[in-house]
Image 1 (cartoon, one colour):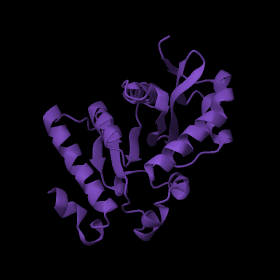
Image 2 (image 1 turned 180 degrees about the vertical axis):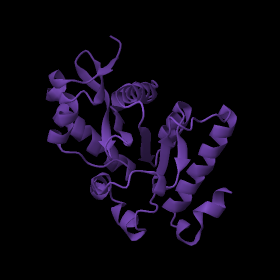
Image 3 (image 1 turned 90 degrees about the vertical axis):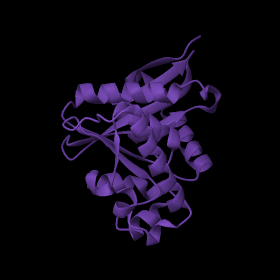
Image 4 (image 1 turned 135 degrees about the vertical axis):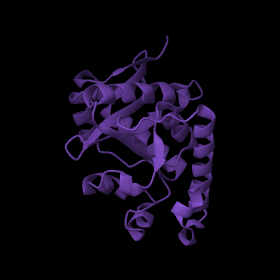
Length: 214
């Protein structure tokens, strides 16, 4: 049976605990990146149809949810996860694409953004038209950043006064579409990922991120 990707709804509430477990497991394995979420928070996303869920014969295959910030000025597609039994099928890209289209439909004037340490996610975002940006171009809503408290690298974020962390910030701006050729996008993403690796190795503290990319 093929995996069905759909807009989540109240009928999917029974998966909330499993979704949270999958998110937490992915964060532990990666050692960074995904903020822990409470089942009640996930249930709210399901009830409001602000999530994408992937199922195969009733089994959870993947998930992603939408967050709205600063009165719809910013929208984030967060918590992108794929169950280990379904990896290697391109499912993450499909789920992310569904979440992107749902976000654009419900919030057409909003800037879509995300933060990630994952090269595959960075590439997916780039293909959708996201651009790497500094944290100053992301939402400044403290509630969003408070969601990073469960990340093991939260202390790095706070020490840097939310100016940078191990994650890379990316934004899709409907008013400023990404028009660069695919090859150039790939080059930029590769450069930013090297930057992530430098940060992870704790070399970034003495570097100037603006000069690095000029």
